[in-house]
Image (cartoon, rainbow, N blue to C red):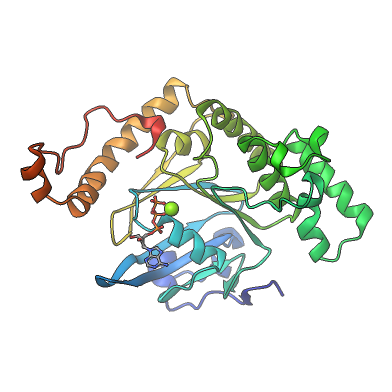
Length: 314
Ligand SMILES: Nc1ncnc2c1ncn2[C@@H]1O[C@H](COP(=O)(O)OP(=O)(O)OP(=O)(O)O)[C@@H](O)[C@H]1O
Ligand SMILES: [Mg+2]
């Protein structure tokens, strides 16, 4: 059995709302979603008391689907990804990965964070091999696998390099190679390119699309950047502001590989950004202290600039 998961099919009582009463195993074509998030809610205690961050999240991701999660800052995107990863526990609801109930972290779901969490004392190839060693794969096989994935991210020439010798973009590519080497069922990516400059991000968008086209991995990708989401996703899921709920979904039907600068990508981004504006306004109203405007004499509460840079995120 996989680590952090419980075997079985989701109970039929809850299938009514999500599957229209059809049990997962009995759905047309016998298809079962790769990921199934059902009625997930989560609250955190803070100095201001306990507050819901996520409320009744229901979401399915098909095998091989690339889904981007967007939403205003603080709406619970990272919390949701951590719950799927098994790093955080939901207050209620369930997550099913590949037909198994998630109870904790597992090698079937590998997370790639904003900062590539590489081991500085190991060189590039040894970083990629690390998880394979834990899995008990022999030295020859893990070197072959590591090189295969380093080639996929165009870093085989740097296999002996130390981590401190790499640029930010190269580090993220090593992190992607390391994740792929584990052959996970799903990649969970939390703003992996947000710390990178625009050109590096542009290159990595192409690389990730090519990797996805080659491997057909199921990907859940969190981003603030709407244009990035349109460039990468089959489907964009927008969360509303606190508590985060699924507000709207957008199917992106553009040929691949897509370019951030493509006119169609820009058009989709504009449409989605319009939807998000009202959510951003709500966040600003909640977060900003209206009285401060009296002091500084600038009326900024609930003001959203007309022209928001789509590439710069939300
Ligand atoms: N461990 C925690 N304890 C208390 N509150 C938390 C904790 N983790 C997250 N939160 C709160 O939960 C809310 C959602 O946080 P989360 O990081 O999931 O949002 P996000 O959508 O990923 O935000 P961003 O887009 O800025 O990364 C925030 O208000 C945050 O302060
Ligand atoms: Mg986050």
